[in-house]
Length: 214
Image (cartoon, rainbow, N blue to C red; front, side, top):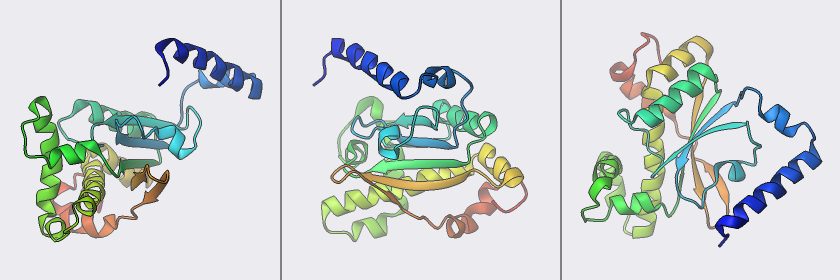
């Protein structure tokens, strides 16, 4: 495990490496950002957004929380989405979960989690929405993995429900919303290729705020 002091040494080495590759790296980095991607992921320390995407600083706007949730009353994630869409004009919004997610496992543990209770209830609500499919999966690990995927799907739907995303898509044709899962056992990302057209067709009369098709 890296020590606190080593972090600053690593930082100096990183600066030296970046300036060796490009002397103007930090001059360019200090200018206004214009990322095409908003990444909403889990806070898990094993899932570093820019590393798994292979992108450089300035290429992705990042928000992370426990179990990659998009909750309408969470001012943090709502502020991030609004800023990314309205000010940065991102073209893609990615919700990325990961297998073996501690937040998902905690949500399915029948015990009092204190302050985490209302947060984890959002995952339990995902289970409730898909209870027939999930209860039909006998293997516990497979059931958890499927809940991870369904949680990503529902959070993507929550992104699309927001006024900022609907208005931007209505006016510009973007951002597109994507659901991913990271597998830390092999390091690979999987695009769940969720059929949002089908999902939204069933709910747009409830959540549509533009008067046009979502």
